[in-house]
Image (cartoon, rainbow over all chains, first blue to last red; front, side, top):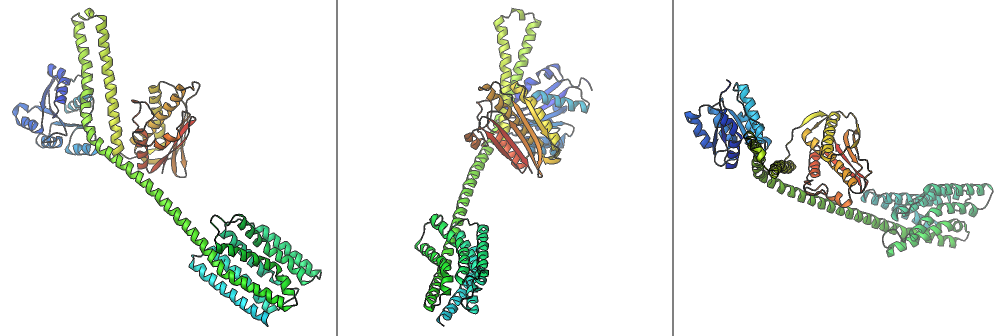
Length: 140
Length: 483
């Protein structure tokens, strides 16, 4: 499925991080490899996913510590309703219990902040490839 | 008649003394001093019984009573020695006794009179006693003040000892009045001793017990002090722990943003430059602008290095306060070899100096360890060692050849990993604090002060300990022992 666009949905309450990710995926978005949706809360993300516009979302990357709905809840909901979506957690809490809980929920990887975003991109690209979705991510 | 009565009274008194001593021996937890008392009175009693049964003045008598008096003299000296903590060479005295006894036997066969037979025997018996009294007085009665009772006790013993000497002469006198005087004296002395000996022994036991209690109290106090310190440290660590766990998240989020933003800045910078180049505008930039662009690159690199450092510190602080690590069974020799090799490579690159190594790793079998944590400890120690040696070189020891020694041996089932250097060593003041969290001698930016405290924590979790052996200015040897 070469040339397919990968729709990535990112959930993070931190404006800085959303902005950073937007810039990081700028090239891919410009090239049309990636469609990026940024959400500032779990509720926002789940609502969007219900919308037919977001039916093609393949990847959900979520922060854990967020006001209201936390990352685990988001992943649980996503996994129960859209099992085909690749899910990732990204947190500054590099704790074994967090990792275990994440993997128990079925996430594909746990990223511990501060991680180089290139590494996140590389991992997502690899996982997409094994799903049969070939996208080209620019990584430094 | 009178003499016999005196003998019977004396014998009875001694028998009672034996029984009292036996009773006291069991009351006072089988104190050896009362055991000596039992033998002392037993010897005396046997002597007087034999004296009564055999009748007075026989040339054989002193030879026969020798063994009884020997027991008494020996145990009295032993008692004195143990009360006043004097050293007595009993072998020497035994030898003297044998010589004296041989002289007495010689006198007997030469047909000499009773006095000549008895005298050398008395000398042999009394000499250890006199010696111990002499030593006691010379030492001003042991380590505590002499009380009136003890002065009296020593006086009585002295007279008693002299009485042992005059005994053969008094015994052989035909004038019964003098004999009666002698036995009255013996009775008096025996009576005094039977009262004084337990008093003095008890005082000694009491003092010993007090000393024991005092040492116990001191020990407990020290223990309390130590555990207070331990509590203080663990409270400090707990506070640091809660703080760190809370703060870590707050630090790591902005770190994530900074680190990646800086990388972006660099990339965007390159992009702009490429754009300029494509449009043929790059050549129009002044050399100072190009220099500035290079500066920007250098700055972004430095920001990245420093954010990495901040992350490292936060991670160190976190691992100091968390106790979850992955356990694995590994071949220790292979594990240490790999870690040492890697740490050395890192250290040589970091400090840009070759290090001579003396590595001796024995096969110590498999062990269940936390590989990640333990390798952290080892590389930290190697880094410290290299740092210390190069620091010494920089500070006036230019011709020092830095040599790192690593040994892995099995010490009676314990694995000992020795990491030694010939660096600057550790002073006494530093040694006291070196395992405290946040204590460092390195300049700001070069050490967090968490390495060794983290190491102690990790080794403790391996049920082991770390020992430091260091001579200020000569070098340091760390030994990690794992059971």
